[in-house]
Length: 213
Image (cartoon, rainbow, N blue to C red):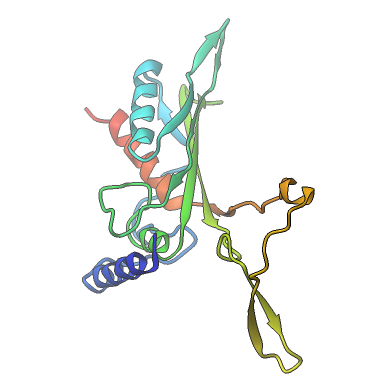
């Protein structure tokens, strides 16, 4: 996203906040203070496991593109847990209200001000005590690591007085073998923890699907 587009998105986001779209504080950004929290892992009473799996897949697919599905399967007398892994999803901005990967409020505005990405893992296993299933949703959040503009040719130098100067390297590229050596690039994404608000949203969606009359 270029600078002008990002500035426009920020202006739209701030106008939404001023118009009543609240930002929510706390470690679970985007959660309403009075909203009921869903346990994570969440217990679901026993029901048809194929029906349960389809509802979990549909709920996850509303927010991410699924990369891999390992269904719940029975080996002998044992039910082996199911697992869903997703692709990385770039965080949606305030200019993309139709996308659901960034929850409204803090998360949507954060993804507008800074490049973010999310990755989800969902595990479905048999409950250890009660007759039913445990569903765990883990959404990891990342921010882009951009220490300097890509392909930049300028370097910063500081004088003894602390003044910064910029020197432009206009020398021709070296024509030697070292130029073809692979360069170790830093990880472009930095993990910053879990997105609890999106975890809650997906869990609530799954619960509503499997508890409807």
